[in-house]
Image 1 (spheres, rainbow, N blue to C red):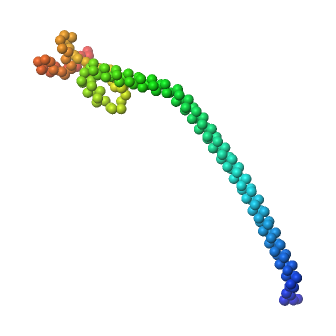
Image 2 (image 1 turned 90 degrees about the vertical axis):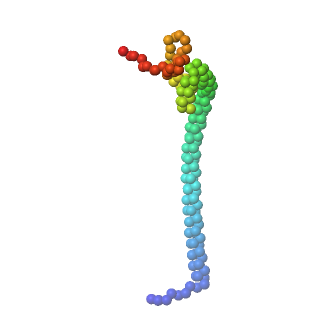
Image 3 (image 1 turned 120 degrees about the horizontal axis):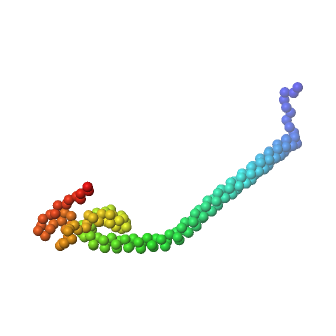
Length: 165
């Protein structure tokens, strides 16, 4: 048995080097082909995911578009009603002013004491419900006296509760 290996000849060395180099080239080409195949597969998967995602956005867009169309139709039906409501509010303000003039300064003070953001229609309803507080009280002859008001002689008329029995 030989413990030593004999050195390769130059021809054998070239042949061995060429074989090793060819093997490395083949391995690189094989790895490159596998990498390119995997990259193509990943790209296709990403493209499919993008299409799926794109369709989701398309569905969301279609839903939003339908909702917008419905809201635009609703706005068109409400615009004439808005004008009508504004007209009613103006009429209510006018009626409130007239009613306050009719009932006097006490009614004006009471209405001014109501919350500022309250609609004129609600103020008018409140005033109509509480009109007895502002109507003059009297026998029907002479100058009417409001409850708690003063007579010509300067005497305050006492306010009495009505008898209910």
